[in-house]
Length: 322
Image (cartoon, rainbow, N blue to C red; front, side, top):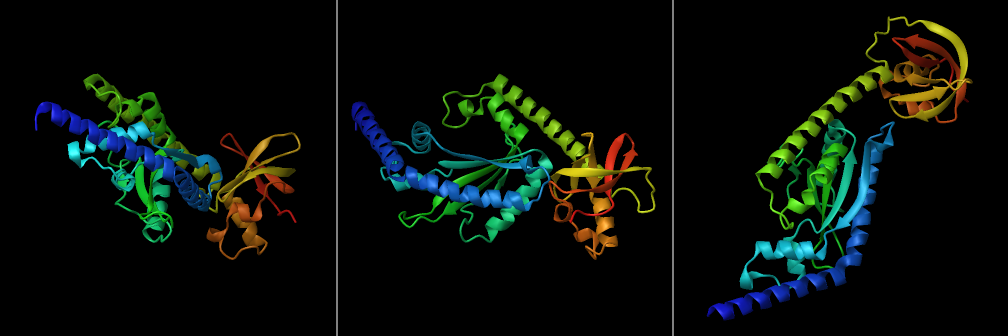
C-alpha cells in the first residue's frame, strides 16, 4: 500500500470512529443521565450516614458527560489505523471515564472517611459493583500533583449489553480548586496542550501547597471537635457556671449544638453536657451512645447554665425540651 492509500485508509478509519462516537452519544446519552442520577442518590445517602453537624462537609457535586470531541481524541490516541473501533459499544467499553460524578469534601479527613465508607459499600454492592480496582491518588498523587480518590462503578441497564460505567471522583475542595487554577483539563491526555517543564513544576508546587493547607484545616477541625464535644475535659473538672438562661437551639448534629439566648448571643452545647444530662434524667444508659441531635433539636427551648471558659461561651442544658 502506497503513502496515499495509507493516508486514505487512516482517514476512513477515523471517520468511522467519529461516526461510532456520534451514534454512541445519540443512543445512550439519556440512559447515561438516568444512571448518573441513581449513583448520585446512592452517594448522597452515604454522605448523610456520616452524620456531620455541618452537612456541607461532604457534597455530591453533580455529574458530567465527557464531550464527544474529547472522547474521539481519546479513542484516536489509544488505537492506530484499522484498530480504531467502529462499534459504539466498543468505545463505551474502552473509555472508563465517559461519565463522572464529583464528591467534594471540606478536608482530607472527610475525604478519607468517605472513601473508606464508599469502598466498603461498593465491595458488597450488587447495584453499583466496582468494575476495576479503586485508585487512591489522594495518598499517592500523580507526578502532576493531581490528588483524588477514584472508583469506577457499573450500573445495570436492561437495554444495554454491558453495565454503564461511571467514574466517581472524591476530592477536597482545594484539590478541586487545583484543577481549576492549573487548567488541568487543557493538559490532561486528549487535551489541546502538552505540559512543558514550567507548567509541570508550577502545578506540582501548587498541589503541594494546597495539600499543606488541607493538613492545617484537618488540625483546625480536630481542635474544634475536641472543644465542641467537651470530652477532652475530665469529669472532675469544674467549669465556672454563670446565670441560668432560656436558650433556643438554632443548629444541631451528632457532636454538638448551637443555641441563642434572648439577647441573640450564641453559645455551644457540648456533647459532654448533653450526655451527662441524659444519664441523670434516665434518657440513656450509656453516654457513648448518645447523639446530641437525638435529644436536642432545632427550635427546642430550655433552661441552660451559661459557662464562660477560655474565651468560649457554652450553654449547659439543665433539662430537655418536652
